[in-house]
Image 1 (cartoon, one colour):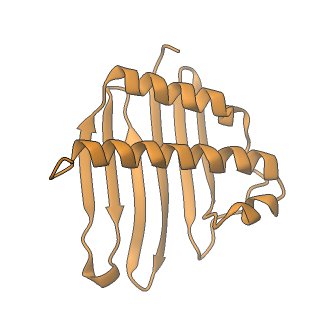
Image 2 (cartoon, rainbow, N blue to C red):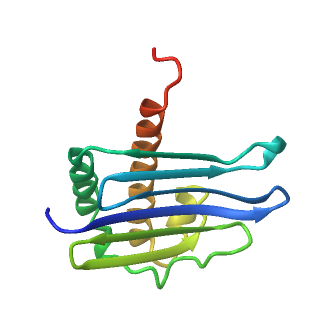
Length: 146
């Protein structure tokens, strides 16, 4: 699993509280960048940056490979709409994919799409990626360790 690796995920919408979004990326040098913007109750943007060990990057590559998302095509997935959009960009070696779809509320939305199997692959990978990122950010920036 050698070669260049880059991953970026974005989910967001523009609504009555402005542009609200979650975005994270893993750069080839191991830098994790995280941003979460919510203007609800005058909340402020959260930005965090940290470097992760190469073992974390290798695990991230393994998760992406195991998901087989690189074989998918977003042509039949729901287009971004007023509810919002999701973007996933991955560079892995010589392969480069970029997916764009609408926000997914639940598996019902996935099952009702024209490419349920492909969108399900995307949906579960995104869930895994968010869980990993939230864990890394939470562990790295914990103010009062347990």
